[in-house]
Amino acid sequence: MTTHAVARRTRYIQLGVPAAVLGTLSAAIAATPAAAEAVSSPIERLQSTPTRLAPAEAPPASYTVQPGDTISSIANRFALRTVDVLTWNGLSWRSVIYPGQTLSLTAGTAPTAPAAPAPTGSAATHTVAAGDTVFSIAQRHGTSVDAVLAANGLTRASVIYPGQQLALTGSSAPPPAAAAPATPPAPVAAGGQTHAVAAGDTLFAIAKKYGTTVAQLYALNGLASGAIIYAGQNLVVAAAPVTAPAPAAVTTAPPAQLFANLDAEQAGNASIIIRVGRDLGVPDRAIAIALATAMVESSMRNLSWGDRDSLGLFQQRPSMGWGTPEQAVDPDRSTRVFYGGSADPNGAASRGLLDIPGWESLRFTDAAQAVQISAYPERYGQWETQAHQWLSQHG
Image (tube, rainbow, N blue to C red; front, side, top):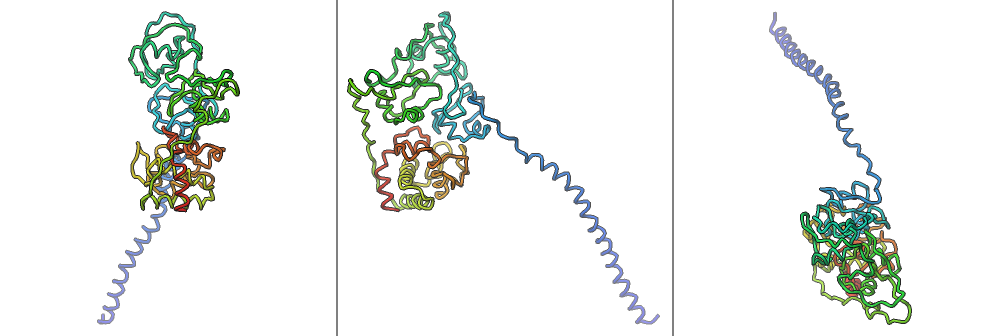
């Protein structure tokens, strides 16, 4: 064999080895997709089932709070907005619910209190159980809230607790008019229109029903701001037209106005609130309400902290459906959520100012309160004059 022939055969052998290897690799690669397909199918089937969400339950008229419940979890369970559940039950973002408490889950209705049994007079004391209220104890034993409070030296601000022994009178409940409320009502002319408070009523809802204001209800009934009403209480909703002079506080003066000079940070946030309002085409009054609300809630600062999980300019709570923590501290987005309406980036999860029916005719402070559900509803009105001035200065 010549040298050239040996060299040619060597090249053929060297080329043949990679060819064999490539053939093996090609067979393996060709087989891989089939094997991968066989493995991936079961995984896809396993993943598809959990993504099917069970539909929300239809909300009943009322709901009894269970251990571990929160307002937010109850609202999510029945596809309701947290803010609506709070409003229907006269609660604020700071309110605490407890097992056994009955909540209304529809607008304009309230849970019906059980009928009071005939008084037996046999029970001298009652041991408080979890979920008991003074009202439910009085109903159960055929007496009144005031009688139980008086027998135990309590006020309507007192807190009862499981295991506590309460003295009972055993007598029939006197009519509500005979009960002495904690704060004596202001004198009212004979013939004034009254409303019997039902479980779940709020002063805001009552005022709306009778075409009056919360401030007038305070004045007509001698109540202080933040007063608690209770089922069975009679509230005067309109004074008699003639004869006796109306209480001096009926013609309610505007709340004392507060004023402040904004620093650079506050002025920048005010400009954002005004700009977003202009972008959305909302009226100047809505922008002024937003400015006053931000001043009350955060001193017009984009806070990264607050009561519980409240955040941002408007102290919106992620746990209550106002968005993620990152969204709550986004000044542009949180302002749009406060305004609400069709352009609300939070959708139907929360309720903004434009979502409040008739907000334009509400008192300045009541309009802000309808969005914020604050424990201090009168504070927003204290910035009304200043808010309009800020609008002129920074708009």
